[in-house]
Length: 257
Ligand code: FPP
Image (tube, rainbow, N blue to C red):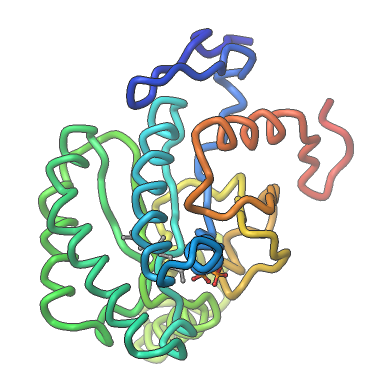
């Protein structure tokens, strides 16, 4: 099997990825960017400082993923449950997203990254919705990595939304119920058209799924670390891919190795 180049240079630093197999690179990696608040609190800073640092980490990891040949990253930026946080934190997270989608678009274009979103955008401020539409439009022709930002995303809500859409189509006679199968159902989810999720990474020490991509991670490998997301880095990401390549993925069948 073909190996990756010995050294990967990311933002001027060298990383060793020469033992990774090109054929076993995951196509789609999902990330729960957890631990921002605790990272900031440990430094006697406001939680939002952690989110700001987390946004920088995401940039670095997308860059790394792109160099490794990963096709898509889905990152959990704001969940349907995050509205329960103090208004100040929610407002600052929204401002951060707005800023990110204003200031980083040139960067994504230079790096051939295509931006898409998952989640119910209708509950977001009009201004942010416009920035999201603009990000999708201005990066639509990029054919490198797809960065899928999950904003106001909840997996149960996504499944209910898909079910409603399908029911509507059945009622209108556009789908015959007997024809509905798993592949078809998946086409009604936000992730339609993206490869299957191979790997889910959760930093921050918690061991739960938090209503993220419940349908899509059916056979994903899970990689956990206690490191907080702002401290997550290319080396850890490469370690996660290295571990992933050693997993025996059986998909319910018998040994593939
Ligand atoms: C979870 O950490 C993280 C979030 C709820 C928000 C994630 C958002 C970002 C990384 C930045 C915004 C993203 C973009 C794309 C600009 P937490 O706050 O629950 O951390 P804690 O568990 O330590 O409290």
